[in-house]
Length: 275
Image (cartoon, rainbow, N blue to C red; front, side, top):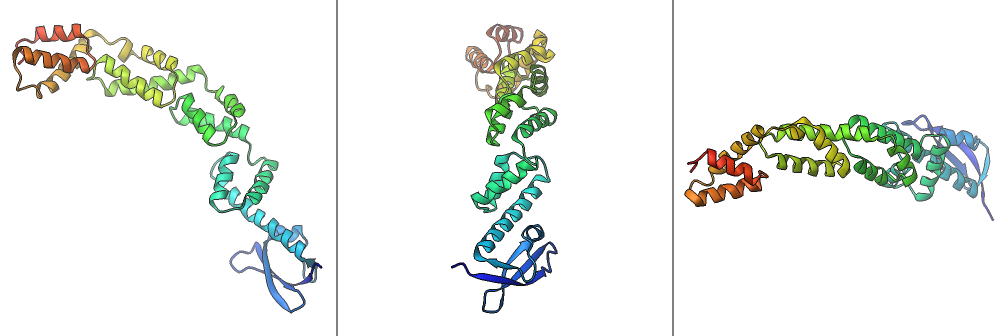
């Protein structure tokens, strides 16, 4: 038999005016039973003298747990738009039971507070405007945030080839300027490695390398200048060598730096005796 109780008193909490302590009389006198949010209090029309049973209490307490988790999710959403998975992960981190999480996500979706399709579009646009990431990296991030392949693909269509080239070129230009004392080959390799890590495709990388003037239009005298710089640095490590042995060590070191054999030979012939 389900036991009945009567609400004997409802008191506003001192530290939170939107929560209320509910007292019941189950036949043994008044006692504190549970606390509820103001919205739950109104929804279930909880008033002094109302008769409720244990099933009612369980339903009310569940609704209150949902309300508390909903408030946590809303605070989390107040900072920026979130994916459903981000909300789910955050509530789990706050030890919210799965059943309640499902209710909260459903309420958020009904109110259009979460929408993975819109999230994906907004996320891609934000990354395009505020970062220089390639499409592959953004796709990985969308997957990590629980976005379906369908929504991710739709959002990634806004990251046009032209924008990808522009972003790749920014990276390439920066690396080229920072690496002016390296060989053209080494500069290209650094650009390729960086852009691959950033998530750009091979085709975009090659276009970016060809487009920037520091690479495609670099003159031989600039390459010779870079070779001279590297040779000076290497020379300090080869002081104990002379003659043919020194030349061979220098050639090997410069070749490993990405300079062509022809250019190395030209440099050594012009700078004899270099030892």
